[in-house]
Image (cartoon, rainbow, N blue to C red; front, side, top):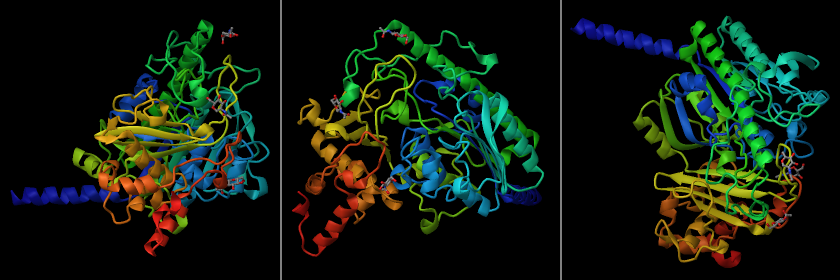
Amino acid sequence: MWLQIVTALVGLALLSLADTTGNPNIVFILTDDQDVRMNSLSHMQHVQDLLIREGTQFLRHYAHAALCCPSRVTLWTGLHAHNHNVTDVVEPYGGWSKVQQVGLHNKYLPVWLSEHGYNTYYAGKLYNGYGEKNYDSDGKYAAGWTESDFLVESKAYTYYDSVFQHNKGDQHDKPRKVTGYSTSIITDATLQYIEDSVTDNTPFFVVAAPIAPHTSITQPPVPHPIPEKKYDGKLSGLKVPDAPNFNPNQRSGVNHIRDLGQITNTSYLDFLDLFHQKRIETLLSVDDLVREVVTKLEDKGILDNTYIIYTSDNGFHIGHHRMAPGKRSPYEEDINVPMIIRGPGVGKGMDTDMVTSHVDLAPTIMNMAGVDPEPEKHKLDGLGLKFPLSNSDEFEQAKNTRGEHVNVELWGPFQQEGRGHPKVEAIQSFKALRIQRDDYDFMYSVWCNQTAHELYDMKSDEYQMTNLYPADGASNTQNILGRPVQQLVNRLDAVILVQKSCRQDQCRSPWKHLHPDGQVHNLKQALDVKFDEQYAQYPKVKYDECFMSTLYDPAAEGPQWDDVEASRLLMRDGLPWDAWA
Ligand SMILES: *[C@@H]1O[C@H](CO)[C@@H](O)[C@H](O)[C@H]1NC(C)=O
Ligand SMILES: *[C@@H]1O[C@H](CO)[C@@H](O)[C@H](O)[C@H]1NC(C)=O
Ligand SMILES: *[C@@H]1O[C@H](CO)[C@@H](O)[C@H](O)[C@H]1NC(C)=O
């Protein structure tokens, strides 16, 4: 009996030794514009079987800026867009050249992982505007990758015969056209890298970033994404899933979105269905990528010591709130994105409603790799997940130590994709907040144009059709969570005030900064009557100036939290709050 126990204990000790020798490998699969709300994942059988069933799905995972380049810079730096200032997909305020200009081509995750002994590899689309001419201008190439094959514009979204640019150490090859389907090329390159990397016994961080299901950009133009030939037409007849906010009878949203007419052109509605079908068909090739990567890891005997993360840079809408295909909005379709993790210490076949977002992923990967976040060096705005997360207690504990909020922001013009929709010239800069716990779930937004606001109670209105913001028709006497709407709005406004320019800890713990005495940790506690006066006194979030460009100029954006905090310090010396009224 004792012998058995001793043998079991020795066995356990050996097991845990085996588990901790060698840092885990990490494979990151990043799609482009993939939605959650149109059920794209339900068409991906291998993602279902190999990731969702073998890992954990994060149902409340968000992109902070529903636009490729700002969102991707956030993913790889752990910074909010207002801190990295890459606010667009093109020059002068966005794209790869802006990344080079702000010096983030060599201060980001792969650099930190390679300093920590990881081999790093990237295949596919890194950033928009990574072009033939600027990929290494002024010697500023994308550092940190042991090896990489980046898609190059203007031939990044062609699906077939795209242009790639290969790097290895100090060698940066000229871009060249690679014949074939881009997702398959990215798959093969990823498998090859894993194959080669396994032999040198060094842990790896590998990113596979296909362009699917982004629309195509080709000459001559094709107005939708282009599936791999074997999948083209496979889902013929598929329609955009019906939802209360899909081309609704009643107006919804604010400003130019509220002004949109209902789509009545039936050939255009057919086109929207075709657009959706083609998107999903391109994802079938990504589904193959997932299967082949898992198979390769299994063949090499390293699957159990490898994390696989699956997500997308931002979501997508097709006809929601009467909008043509596109992203950039603060609505749920655009910001809620797929997020699945499988790997050591990750619950199998589980899902969680803890709130997570893209700013948390760089620190999560650092945790996986054993790199300690340093405030001075990494300046991270997010909070990493820590593993194990494999049973309900661990999830509950993690949920209680994490925030309940997501900061959502974007600057610039309203833009729609695909053909055949009326042109609308409007400015779409906004600050928005998603905030959710077991007993509440809200979206609140403040827009630049005419300072329109939105407040949706997502528990009863998950499609965001009824704006509860008092000025927009709802009666001021309505109660939410037992308090007048205005009291709720005062709290949400204050959280946005902290979030819109937050850095590091401010971003993770806004309540701590609103209540430095540590009395308040969530919205429910902040709603206490005794704080009404405090919240009534904060300056309201507003813009002083709106731009048709994606310029982020803090001087145009009204009250700033740092000034409020400074004034609170003054108040301690006897100066009153209402200096702010
Ligand atoms: C962001 O970049 C623009 C353009 O370079 C600059 O004018 C602006 O001041 C920057 N914003 C911040 C917060 O640094
Ligand atoms: C502001 O909103 C109004 C009202 O919906 C809209 O008509 C107008 O185009 C918007 N203006 C800009 C500059 O976005
Ligand atoms: C209706 O939609 C089709 C397909 O997008 C487009 O070609 C056509 O011009 C539209 N008709 C009208 C009257 O807008």
